Structures are given as C-alpha cells and as structure tokens.
Image (cartoon, rainbow, N blue to C red):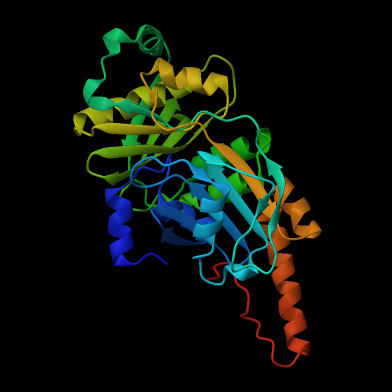
Length: 327
C-alpha cells in the first residue's frame, strides 16, 4: 500500500508514462513504491512499470528482481509483467521466490515511449498538419463539450463497447475499461466529448493529477474513415490546457507508427525512452495464461473460487489466503 508519504512522492515525481496510480490500482492490484518505482501486486500477479518517478534510469534484470523482492508475500507470485526502459533476460531470480521466474515472452523490438506536448510553447502556426486539421474541423458538423461526469451515460458505454468489440486487444485493456465509470467520477478527471448532430461520436478521459500537468488516459471514437474525431478531441484538450495554464500534456506511448505520427502532428515530442515488455511465470499453466493475457479476470476468479471450495473441505486452510488484492 502507498503511505501518505509515498502518495506525496508519487504526486511530486509524476514521471511514469501515461500513468495515474489511482486508476491503475483499480485493476492491477495494490500499489507499492519501491526504489522510486510503482509496482502493483494482486496476490498472484505483479505488474511492474519500470519507469522511475525521479530521474531517468535504465534497469537491468538484477534491478528488477531486487525491487520485486521487496514486495510483501512476493514468494506467491505466479506471473510478472515487466515493461519499461529495461534490459531483460530469460529468467528473473527473485531472492524471496522458491525458484526463478522463466520468461515466456520478451520483446526484441522496442516501442516508442511517452509523448508530451509543452503547452506553454505550443504554437499552432508552426504545425502545418495540425493547422490543416483545424481548418477541416470547421467544415464538419462537430461540436466539443468539456465536463466532469457524475457517472457514465448510455452513449459512453456504447462507444466503449464498440471499441472493445472491434479491436484485437488484450484482456488487461479490456479490464481497464471496466474501471472507467467509477474513475470518471473522481474530482481530478475531466471528459471531452465530440458530438455530431447531437449524437456522441467520441470522448476522451483526461486526468489532471497536479495543477500544471494533464494526461490523456483513454479515448474512444465511433468507427469510420475521415471522421477527424481524434483531431477534434486533441485540439479541445490543448485549448483547455492553455486556458488553465497547464504546462504539460502527456499523450502516452505510441504502439505503432501511425499513432506516433498523429502525436507529432500536434507538436508532441517523445520525452521517455523506448520500452520493452517481458512476461515471466513460474509454471506451465500460468505461462500459457500470462502469454495470452487471459488470466484477468474470468480465469482468475475461477481459480480462486476453486481454491476456496477446496478450503471448505481442508481443515486449517483459510478461504482468505488468496485475494485479488493480495499483499
């Protein structure tokens, strides 16, 4: 768990890409601050974004294993997801674990790290493609509204459902979307909505964790070519940040070249190093699940229910020995 001191350190050192610990702890597990890095632990799975909240550091596999060893009850770990500017090997030898964790997947190619827009330096006149996009927006029947939500409405659920249904995404991303209705009620979260003829066609979820920083957490849009919905949202978010004298807009990482081009079009610069992902497990069953990402949540709940059923028949075994938010 994060202590009050830890939370202040996280707030002050907010440098983890596209990151808002209050959001990610909703589905990755309990957050722990270890040597300047956030580590999430749910009793069986560790999720470790290896990005320092302080100055940039490149981590190696020994660094990762050493920090994991400081997480309470880590000997029970079954799967570890590690991503960041990190050099990974085929094993993670965590001192507290009875045996090393074996890699089932380690990226050889890196992905572009976080992109950031310097709002105080933003000048649309210098951005030819963005300027063209703004001109095109004036010819579309689009309007943008910014507000804070008391909860999701049916049209928000419709767009999220379409996004999940029409994309090939992992179950981590699928589970992440289930936390959004509650997360959007937080006082630091703002929503930017794009309407066409009074119908919601896109919306973006933006976190303002500090007075001078904003993060684009998620965006959802109606499918279709040439809609320029993302341009509408980006322009509205930038203009809002300028009006509030927010200095930095974090736009997240880019999983492909097209997304990187879009962010650069709006003046974003890559401000975090490229990153890689490694998946490590302790046994064959969890290796398959970790590799496919299928252990969140249906399979996990089935495992835990089965274990709890067994505990009813086994004296001395508590049904509370494992929980989704262990540690």
